[in-house]
Image 1 (cartoon, rainbow over the protein chains, first blue to last red):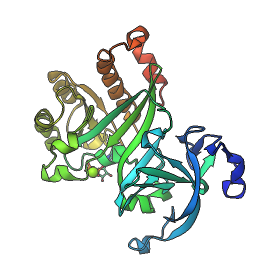
Image 2 (image 1 turned 45 degrees about the vertical axis):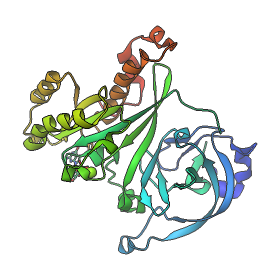
Image 3 (image 1 turned 90 degrees about the vertical axis):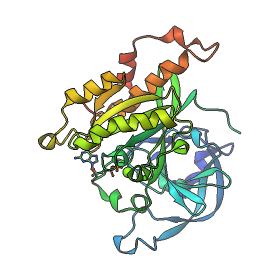
Image 4 (image 1 turned 30 degrees about the vertical axis):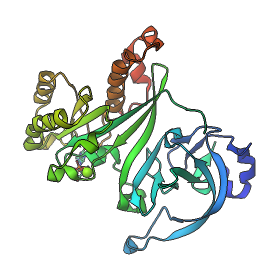
Length: 120
Length: 202
Ligand SMILES: Nc1nc2c(ncn2[C@@H]2O[C@H](COP(=O)(O)OP(=O)(O)O)[C@@H](O)[C@H]2O)c(=O)[nH]1
Ligand SMILES: [Mg+2]
């Protein structure tokens, strides 16, 4: 499977995703082709795996490549976590792997991190 | 904004006593590594799932209670806009079954009058601890003219099927109401259609 962080430009056409966006772990379809817009900025996204010892201080990494979705019902299948600050984190709807991205409550825009999903 | 990618949107709720398995029905049991993640610590608020029924793309938005049921404080705001309700009891817990009647009253009081309901007898994997027979579940459902199914969130039995049946029932209701909607034309073989949607077991 392609690793998008290396060659993500080939996944974009007219600013949209060319292929389906699926879960890395169970292949559940998250977004259908051309339903999300590419955008780039930096965000600290908590890691998918955390050590149990520091639940109070979850570890994050800087993520900068996103698919943005303006209407949450554009998603084929997705889970929204409970609210943390201004955000809800996004998960796979079938296996709950996540965060695969986050939802910004004030703007109602959802962002899916390219490196945390597959394109196929 | 982008064009609408679906035909219908159904808001569904999970209701029932604390401990019957509502959260597990929405937030699947995963015995794998994911259970130790960030997500399981904060919990899931709702899910969006897409199903296709009779050629219609239907978005289901499924909500879990945030534990309000423990204090019997489920009120109008949780029910607002709900088109379908999964009313859950635990087959190993008599009290949760008896409370179904209470929940039905609560729903009558707070939810939209024509909300579609379905009763789920959850934890059907626990055969040795069963207290409520399937017959009793079927009986109470018949009494109130509600659909019924036994499920197991743990063994993933009938979960997907329950949601697609509830969605279908709502679809039946809404179909007649949309003026100019040509849905009646495609009322072919309901059963068969629902079976083609990803079913978990059997
Ligand atoms: N054996 C079995 N246990 C279940 C099932 N569903 C939930 N449970 C367990 O029942 C308990 C309560 O579940 P939970 O989903 O938190 O109930 P809620 O209070 O209705 O949200 C938890 O310990 C679950 O592990 C099931 O289908 N089978
Ligand atoms: Mg719960």
